[in-house]
Length: 370
Image 1 (spheres, rainbow, N blue to C red):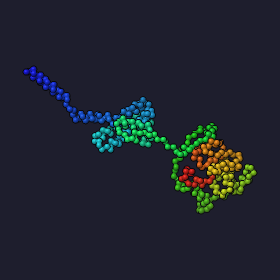
Image 2: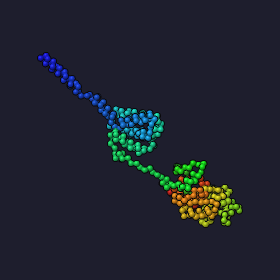
Image 3: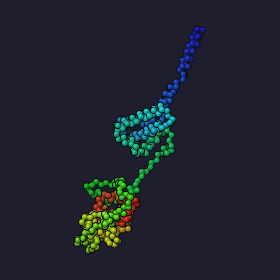
Image 4: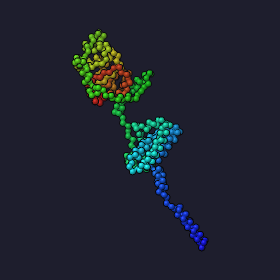
């Protein structure tokens, strides 16, 4: 019986030990397990692994384009997660504090990595562009974190970069390239000129020519603003080919020879404004000379150059300028194609400019004036 009792007692002890080993875990242990499970899920673990990879690359001194993109995406997602944690009403204060603490850990590694490679700091700026590669990586990291994405976030569409209308139309004729290459003292630069930032001026709300007309018509106190032209000499009257200037034309040439440079010729049609402009350019040696005219008269201007200044060559820009002579003294272009050639025209160093039928650009807001 004793043995039997002992056996029963031993069996009871064995049963007791078995019951002890099968005891349910405490609430604290369950909470710890849930916490560890939560630590391994979500966006933060993905960020932690990614930031360690970037940190390792920085330590090796090999932060290439891929890791730079990863660095930027980590920073973007970290900001998003921080904002969510601060505004999520379903989180308890303890959970919110823990989440922000873990995000601070990621931020600390980012800061240390940026300290090793300071070029990464610019990727943290708000205005830094987010590339298609960065958007794709962000999507992949969120998918790896188990985040449900919208269709717009799942599909990464590469949008073409907008090209300014002027840049699309811009051309550089081969003759211009030849001229630039022929200059041994100036390295050729065929890049488009930087568009100047418009600055508001006192006349910003005026038409382009209205204040100019008034300035020529009226002076201070309401007096006539036009100046007295000098009396022309025999030299001013001399014109190649036996031609003779009218008195008012010779006066104009004499004033240019005397040093005046800016004019508004408002004579009636047929009084020889074209000849005056070309002869004034000749006596002042204002070459190369740019002449901007309506399309219907640009060939006539080329003939007038040959007539009044036969020692000077002229070229007319047609379309893309295939037949252009960039070494000519006078370059003639019409308003309609000027925007296509404005880039290289600025490299020729014009010393003079004639704008024919200037009322074409009287409206400062029109496409032609711009």
